Image (cartoon, rainbow, N blue to C red; front, side):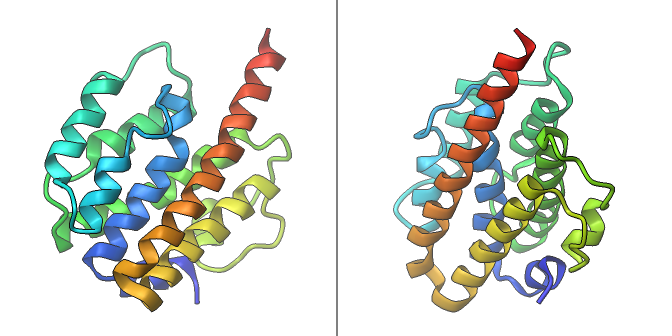
Length: 182
């Protein structure tokens, strides 16, 4: 099943986790630490307050786009800024879909082996020629949605593990990129 189809079939919690996982993997671009979004993950497990966690994350990362930020960081900041204050079905579906696209675009920007495959095409299942970093992000997004569809709240731990793995990969890419610029 394609990523677009999985997003279309996901419930509120799956959509919120999908969007959050995309944002979580891109936090290194904003200078955030590994624990920054934990309160939001807790709220999806019904042990936290989404709105308070979102406000705290925005507060720690500062508000609005910085003109000095590169394109990848701007996309990550937009994911955070666009997060709905309350993860209800309508708003969270739009946000999760936008986060999916933004995260894939970020990975495409950062991939040294950039291919010509459009992000929309790979989300619909056309993956021929997709650069490795983008392909890995696509697999993570699909995994998060499949785990949550199959296991509900119990799948949140695995979704978080997938997100942490992706965050580590992106942090390494960002670090390598920074060393290359200096």
